[in-house]
Amino acid sequence: MIQLKNLTQLCLSIYVIAAFSAQSLAQEAPNYSKDVAPILQEKCAACHNPEGIGPMPLLTYQQVQPFAALIHDRTSKRIMPPWHVDPGIGIQSFKNDASLSNAEIDTIEAWVEAGAPEGNPADLPTPITFPSGAEWQLADQLGPPDLIIKSSPFDVIANGQDQWWTPSVPFAGLDQERFLKAAEFKPSYPLGKKVVHHGHAVLVPEDGGRQVALARYGVGKSWEMFPEGTGMRVPANGNIAWNLHYFPVGAEGDDDVVEVGLWFYPEGQQPERETVGEAMFRVDGLKGMARGQDIVIPPHGYQVLQGTHRLDAPAVIHSYRPHLHMRGKVMTMEAILPNGDKEVLSQVNKYDHNWQIAYIYEDDVKPLLPTGTILQFTSVFDNTANNPINPDPEQWVVFGRRGVDEMSHAWVGITYINEEQYTQAVAERRAQQETLRIQ
Image (cartoon, rainbow, N blue to C red; front, side, top):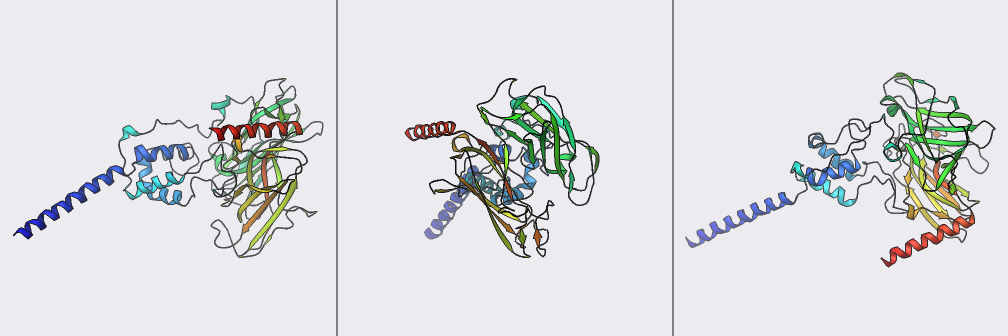
């Protein structure tokens, strides 16, 4: 009788402990309102809102809960948010870092495993109003553009191969030379946002002088704002040479127009540093070859290309944007200094042709490179079935403008400076590092 009583008490104790533990775990598990909503609002909602390019809005619990398992899958594999820099090598501090931290990924995983609870709506973060695709993304910081240039209209087809539109349009609106502070590439909304894959707006001066790339665009990179005290010299007259790459997605429309907004320094003001903006550093077609002549990727195979460029003046690098096509998987940018030291600046190891992200360095880590530095770029192509966006691993792949062909270059945001400016920049960087060390 005593043994039965003791057994009953033991079972009751186990039940109470289990119930208490389950309650504690439920209380400790992340919930949407307090833990997950802030992550999605900061890192996902800019695209996943009714006006964004994401396939579904992720602004409320009712919108998010049905996709909880999918969100967990995509974030745990680091497919979303799109951010393809290798986290294990090179510079890791970026102004536009959209990636999730390990802690954020773990929070989403724990939330899903707990059944995706909503939590208390009173804990939700203050909602953010996102600009629509029809608005200028830089307007909140800079106000409306000082000048807007427009392409000639283009009739978008619903289905077919890649399309290129290359009109020349007179450049008007300036009565004197000015220095550009920022530029934003704005395809039409909503059609243009879906079909304009990338493009360029290049000013060809009236006097035949150096061409000026006013704006470059790719899905994932729509604007460029130069660092404080840095600007691009823009002549007053000429023509805009547009190079627009359209890719049909099943929707058609007549008279599609792309706009570029330009923000200038005040009239008569010349910034301390003059930049060329994003400059092309080729990886293919070097050493006297025709462009892309060295790209020959066998079926079910790989190819590695390497290109080197010597800097004939000191330089500051602001951003890095690899450009490959569907078989492109990796591009590494390294600096070989005049003393022989070699440093990996950045490596994109999960390149995805659907995104053309410019990785913008934080001010305190921008590469400061002396005269004689060799910038070395290495590209890796994957033409196997393991490449998830490979349209056909049975094909030989060569150079071409279409997405199913290949090319290999990097767009590098770079400003060339003089020796005095370089010495000053290095001294300032060392002083900043010493201050941080003391703190």
